[in-house]
Amino acid sequence: MAAIVGTAFLFSTALMTGAAIAEPPAIGPEAARHLLNRTGFEGHPAKIDAMAGLSRGDALEKVLAGAGKPARTPAPAWSGEFVSPRIVRTLSDEERKQFQRRQVERAIELKNWWVCEMLSTPSPLTERMTLFWHNHFTSSLQKVRSATLVYRQNVLLREHALGNFATLLKAVSRDPAMLVYLDSATNRRGQPNENFAREVMELFTLGEGSYSEQDIREAARAFTGWSINPENGEFLWRPNAHDAGIKTVLGRSGDFGGDDVLDILLARTETAVFVVTKLWKEFVSPEPDPAEVRRVAALFRQSGYDIKTALRALLTSEVFYSAQNRGTLVKSPVDLVIGTMRQFDVGYSDPLPLTFLLRTLGQDLFSPPNVRGWPGGEAWINSTTLLARRQFLERLFRVDEARMQAQMADGVRKGVDKIGAPGEGRARFMRAALDIRFSGGEWLRQFEGAQSPPNARLQQVLLALPPASPALAEAHGVELVRRLTADPAYQLK
Image (cartoon, rainbow, N blue to C red):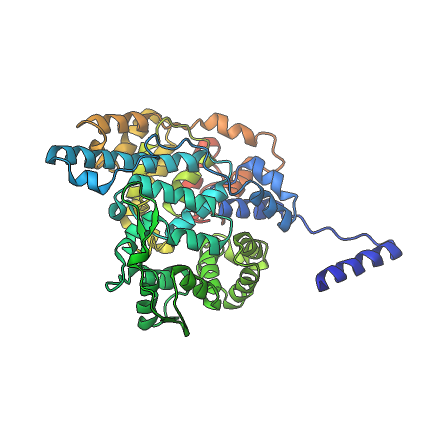
């Protein structure tokens, strides 16, 4: 109300005095590139130019306007199928081997599906947030062992990616893939399984140090009876398996069920602080500012956990646009691979080599390393992954594209013979690798006629920081692209 009154007073004063109302300043091309790369995967020159003349608020609203849409890549043909474990137990040894082989094929197809969606989506923020929640509410194909259930979870995360965190938390807590991953389906009266109760406090809401072991034991009792229908793979409430006794969780007592415990967790201030801290590390910098985190967390809680409210507070702030927070985040494998493919309009016919490249670089989609997910940050870089990153970029921009793609296949095709008959997977992989193509001359035409010198414009578009290498002034065209993408600054955003 105070803000509205203040705005009205300024407006009426301006009318009486004839003074012009100051428009919010435009963010400019550098800040536009920063926003596009942090909220998406790349900043095309046309997108940067279209956003440079907007204010911070309008620029973010432009990003948010297309967010939250369903995936436009067609779902895998098997996505509606679920094979009951009871049926699997009746299979012969040979039938079981064939079934397991199909599961491997479907897992790879699922990863390919998400790579395709990230490459083609008109709403990269939606995919970035879906990936963020996938790493927050972690599960994996290895434990769940059903591509169908993991696909359904991905759809769920995308649906709520920019919606309401409280709604998302409750939906994920009942999600069958999560019930399998954290053993909730085996949690029953008299034999409580504490895995989900522990992780929902430590990794999903409060963070470490905000609960006791007794809180975990009591919360586990509240979640008894949450299970899965073995015939269709959907959530099933089993009242006979539920512990209806009195539980005490974080100082509150009652005949709690699972949703009651989630409400208790959502009522704690630690939850908003914990989630905002993770959003900060995703979008702003590796080192959160405690005062700013508390400010944004308070707005987050006041909004009833509206995710866009938290993002608006973070992504229009001075600290987000501060020069000291530019180029402070290491690109994840998804950032590097998907971002490079999108930035340079690289053509492809089959995403399989990219899917396996992501695994080589340490970000195997739908297969985080453990319940804590991918640690991110500097952990993305080690002697092996740094070399693979450089090789990917070097080979992508070589003149002899056919030879480059054949070499690109080395080191990332391990395991592809699991696709189809022996040898078929490798042949498919090689065909796909050979068909990855960058048309340098065509891509560079968008820089013709630019007001700023082409070299300066290219550097502005591709790098978050000044290049570490001084040997750029004499390079032009595709050679300049090679040198810029080989520069250490290209690994940052």
